[in-house]
Length: 329
Ligand code: NDP
Ligand code: GDR
Image 1 (cartoon, rainbow, N blue to C red):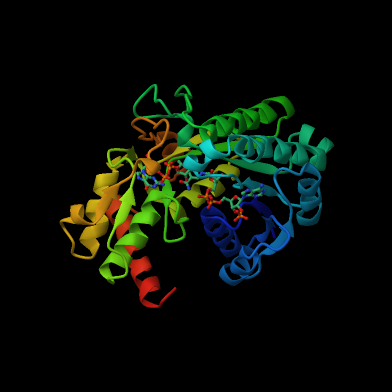
Image 2: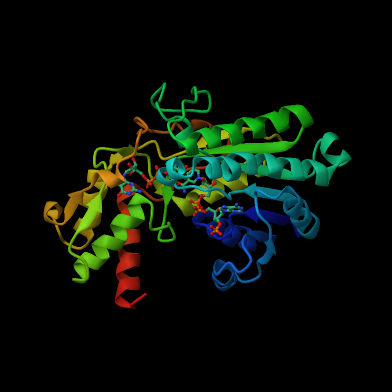
């Protein structure tokens, strides 16, 4: 039975990935931080059979102990401070977790694997890199060779993690791959991110529980896919004979206005202008440019392609929040 260790198991991707791996017959271990993290119970309920281990990405020795307990064949490093807007408010903390946390995890794997690693590596490592690294884009669409130009403390931290992953691959022969994933969403998306903020608000407006949705930049554009599809790409990367970097994206971009159009249309509201306000509070000090991913390499090498398009994704999220709101959750 293959064994996997996932950091960030309480997050959107951690839950989908653990479900995928359990279904494939893996024994799955997940890191939980904090002395009494209420999400531990949610993980146990959502993905029965997963074993949780207390550890924190900022504490190398806790990561080493987690590896000794899990004895994984595959490590998926998904843990991060992942909200871009927040990264300006706590840039140093974002650096500690999202940048240096990657180094801690890589180093823990190296220490854990010891000679085996230098001999070719028996622990495979996945790093959750991001399209935010492209920032002020130098090429449209973006692929694995596009110059990185991050525009937020989060983006800068992800660039560090990305190059450190490549460095461990090149220095120690570690089977370390980096997935440069574009935005991916789902009903499990945190409510701080724009798609979920909109889907929750649209459901509440439809049910008469909310009358205003306060937004930031409506002209921003993203290449949005479904998280369930994207965790499958992560797994495929670690099944390759050699580690590498891959862009994972749909190749289609939409604006926040498009998101509002589709989300409100699900509840038969066409004139959403009367509900939506803008507030400078939700604008960012710097925005990324036209993010569109070119996932040709993932398609050709991994055999990966997205299965859910933008309209289906937004509809799925609004319908899920309508059901949750109707049930009073
Ligand atoms: P989430 O924000 O949903 O989850 C982040 C996870 O990181 C949570 O489990 C959180 O734990 C954990 N975490 C935070 N701080 C620490 C810490 N100090 N030590 C250990 N774990 C910690 O993110 P997603 O699931 O959306 O994304 C997964 C990864 O992929 C992240 O690294 C993200 O940056 C990256 N990514 C995401 C994309 C997306 O569109 N979703 C696109 C590209 C990259 P807790 O619940 O306890 O806070
Ligand atoms: P992003 O996601 O920054 O792309 O990072 P987010 O959903 O937060 O923002 C997307 C775009 O929407 C605009 N926007 C708003 N965003 C939020 N959150 N709230 C608003 O009210 C709002 N109004 C407009 C933003 O300006 C932005 O342009 C996500 C995270 O998952 C990262 O961890 C990941 O690396 C990248 O996706 C790829």
